[in-house]
Length: 167
Image 1 (cartoon, rainbow, N blue to C red):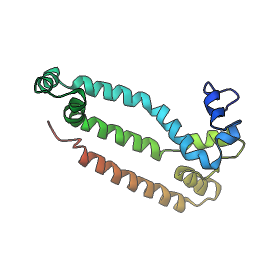
Image 2 (image 1 turned 45 degrees about the horizontal axis):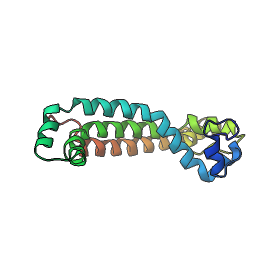
Image 3 (image 1 turned 60 degrees about the vertical axis):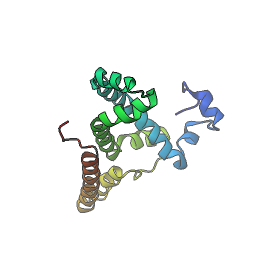
Image 4 (image 1 turned 120 degrees about the horizontal axis):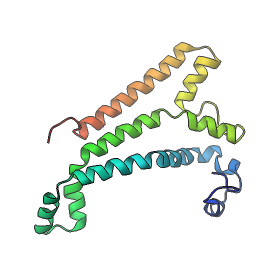
């Protein structure tokens, strides 16, 4: 993220960022945290999706090709439906990782000398309520609300992705 030492410094400078402070400004934080989340989770996605693709029977793919399906049709109508459970699983894992946003804002705040606010994420806000203000009730309310929302969204992923149904 720091254009002075980054391997993608040319790209950052082309986008108009000359320092770490410019890159992690308040308006850029959603994009910065999205990029961080992508790069920390991309390996998991690759491994799981590769395994899911390898789990699809070659006979099914060959039958689709014999029936005249082109590569796009095979991907959309054969592979994607057969990978729904794995996509749902990774959606739940990404949701769990996203609701735990705490370390990244803290590290960026320290690296940028306070550009990132201490209460940027809900987890940070719960931490501030509990340990800086002594408001354990407020902290618990934030945490329970975050848990309920995450469980509700996970339930949607489970039901829509038919995660526990047998083939």
